[in-house]
Amino acid sequence: MLVMKELARRVANLGIRTSLIMDLRLQDHIRNVVALVLLLALSNEARVNGYGSSEQCEYSPELAPRPHSVSILEFGAIGDRKTLNTIAFQNAIFYLMSFADKGGTQLYVPPGQWLTESFNLTSHLTLFLERGAVIIGFQDPFHWKVINLLPSYGRGIKAPAGRYLSLINGYMLNDVVITGNTGTIDGVGSIWWRSFTSHSLNYSRPHLIKLVASNSVVVSNITFLNTPTYGIHPVYCSNVHIHNISISAPSESPFTVGIVPDSSDNVCIEDSTISMGFDAIALKSGWDEYGITYGRPTKNVHIRRVHL
Ligand SMILES: *[C@@H]1O[C@H](CO)[C@@H](O)[C@H](O)[C@H]1NC(C)=O
Ligand SMILES: *[C@@H]1O[C@H](CO)[C@@H](O)[C@H](O)[C@H]1NC(C)=O
Ligand SMILES: *[C@@H]1O[C@H](CO)[C@@H](O)[C@H](O)[C@H]1NC(C)=O
Ligand SMILES: CC(=O)N[C@H]1CO[C@H](CO)[C@@H](O)[C@@H]1O
Image (tube, rainbow, N blue to C red; front, side, top):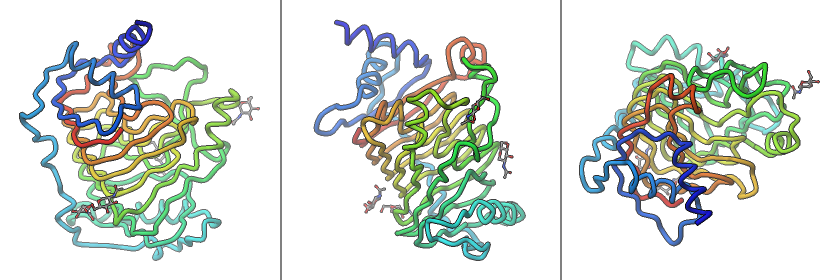
């Protein structure tokens, strides 16, 4: 009974005003509460249409190769796990912006351990991680830029409110693909988890991938490890296709969540494995009264063949 109450509370907190179209195949056993939250959401307030339209999952532009490709090596990056490659990534993206209207480009990351701080993506870009390529988040909260909270998150509990910029960010982009031949993006979250647990952070923790107000996004064929908080966080996005990925963080990592479609529509999550400290998938529409005021629900989400 207590468990049901807690689940009901969490469903209410998620603020799901959404029509979920789901074909959720939970393999083995349900370890994660969010799976139950999703099922409850189904029985409570969602339109169930498990074998109906899966149009959210049809979008696969990565099959069309980009006309241009550059390697991060051309921007002086060194994949030795020690050299900080932030400038190389930022310069590469800056250079690639000029190809946006020429069919776009691929930024190729070869095998190696590419240490970096936060960088932003651009439109009509494919970030491709070769097998053996690992993008590694730099471990020092003092180096991370702080940004304002999104409007659907209000001012936050703390003053001054803010959030550390995520490792890989996109703002108002169109046509972005993050993929690879099973490369890895590792947030090395332990310092963030420790600081969070000991209340020594002044702002909210970063995510691995955060895409804001973007359209036509594909994330595939990548392993995401040790995110500081969320693995993939699309906010105010449309047409997001996440497939054939793996996301994990240790079970004791505090409040880590795999995929968080937030005030976003037409989202497909399929053929993926997610194992986190908290929720595997959480559907959100902002936070409490700020989310309600902002008024953009998450809707048309298709989740299938996931191992949570
Ligand atoms: C990345 O985007 C954020 C948010 O718009 C911005 O504050 C930051 O300066 C950008 N970083 C770079 C290197 O352009
Ligand atoms: C948090 O704020 C305090 C007080 O301003 C400061 O001493 C501390 O260095 C800050 N911590 C971080 C991680 O920025
Ligand atoms: C991702 O993996 C799938 C399954 O192996 C494959 O069909 C697809 O071509 C891959 N995509 C890319 C961009 O490598
Ligand atoms: C991250 C991930 O799950 N990658 C898988 C994508 O699909 C290929 C082929 O089925 C697998 O070999 C990868 O492990």
